[in-house]
Image (tube, rainbow, N blue to C red; front, side, top):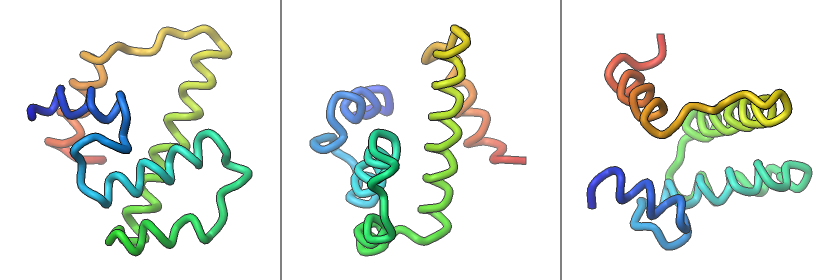
Length: 101
């Protein structure tokens, strides 16, 4: 499966997409953090650790989720255009090559 097909499968249903169990656990946590942040407790992190995610990886996922949610909500509120897939793919390629500076 190529990267684009994998992304589509995750967007369709992350629960059944062919991804690593660590990613599946993280996606479940991030869904709850996005949709029901008031219900997230320390107990929600335990399955992530059990799946093999480090605290640093969990923290990175939380930061990425929080930033995306802020950007998305601000864009919706102020009626900004959100870049399309091509722009996001270019940005992701750059970050994968250079990392965060």
